[in-house]
Length: 325
Image (cartoon, rainbow, N blue to C red; front, side, top):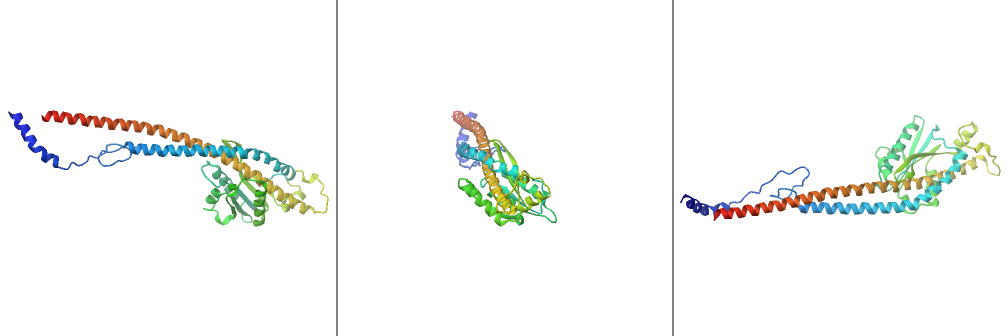
């Protein structure tokens, strides 16, 4: 009798209880979950699917960039190795004295125009700044010539007043000796120097490159070192004949040496850039694959949790209906 009265009172009060708005319950989410709409207890499967789609697209891009870098590396590697024979005779003839003490030094920094290639650009910038500190002094003048957009962006922050010339988009067209010789001629016309120090990355393998400094002396310094018995190559063992003076011959040799060293340095730096980009894109692709695995696991857990929650709600509703009868 008492149960029947309780059921009748419950049916009478049920419409008024159902009419009250029920505030959605907000559950605290963990730090690795995104906050969903009101009433959602965990990350939604749609959010996970969107993130998985983004990661897959990024992985496709990194794989494509790796393939493009590998293709460009194969095209330029042979030319870089062949260009090493251009400057080696000059080293034997005029020597290479990077520690020579001169009043006017110019540091030519070679970098890339594009990023996503590891630390090759920051490496040459560090070496260039170290050369600046070693050669700067009260009666000494050190200037920079920047080749490449990335080194330009870094050096302009704190060394803007010491930059004499900047060159960008050198790799826009296929590199050849004529193009680099025009660049070398522009540098020689715009700067005054006793020693040119070219800083670049020498290519060894896809995963290895070595920051290198090549030194080109002015004709006056070469003649002076030759007279005082300085550190030169085999120049003094040759006899100069013909109508040209020794100064004119040294001028031509210095200009030709600089263009040959620049040609080799540009090709070596391009090889290092492509190899570093291949390594960087390969690492990015692997990281994207690992992230996809974690997101797939999160998606499966979230989907299973949502299905379990729906089943519990269905069973609870059915039990409540049974109890109300």
